[in-house]
Amino acid sequence: DGGITQSPKYLFRKEGQNVTLSCEQNLNHDAMYWYRQDPGQGLRLIYYSQIVNDFQKGDIAEGYSVSREKKESFPLTVTSAQKNPTAFYLCASSIRVSNYGYTFGSGTRLTVV
Amino acid sequence: KQEVTQIPAALSVPEGENLVLNCSFTDSAIYNLQWFRQDPGKGLTSLLLIQSSQREQTSGRLNASLDKSSGRSTLYIAASQPGDSATYLCAALLYSGGSNYKLTFGKGTLLTVNP
Figure 1: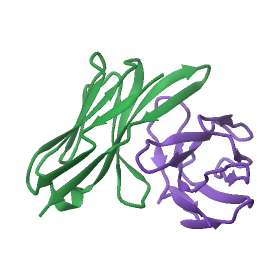
Figure 2: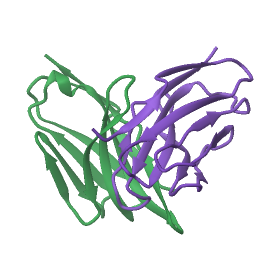
Figure 3: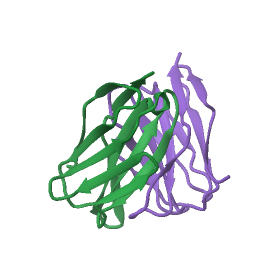
């Protein structure tokens, strides 16, 4: 079945450590996105990518970095510059960045210890 | 700046009741509106996608309507079941310049269906 796979499901980060969240899709979608979800808040866009080797900052990109070397993969690195990284991270994809629906992965819960 | 509001924030109903969830958006120039379901600790599952040229979409017991002129969408759930208990999110897609589009989410409605 086609879909989006996020790993790991749970991730623990120590202070000052960089961690990378994986997102892989086999839907042949061009566009991919990373969102952050905090309790009581709507989803907020971190980064998005329309095509391979191209990505754009979203509303809350500070402290995060991404790469898009393959169409299927869009990993997110949470750097030590992100001061409040504890959250639920969701990856999504769409056929392209236009008038199409989004498909979401199952999420990664990141906790700072 | 597009803002999406969902009312109520939480709703508790007895099993079998028909119910309506509301979503409003401030910028009527949307391209589409999507309703999602989220179970605790899980990702989002797409329920219905309404294009701007459409007025409603139906899937099983779910019916979503869109009124761009008033900036409103509703999700109607017929004959609710305990398995419908989840958070329901609406999201509006807006053109943001160049080749960019932005999906703005509401904060969701937490639905509890009691047996």
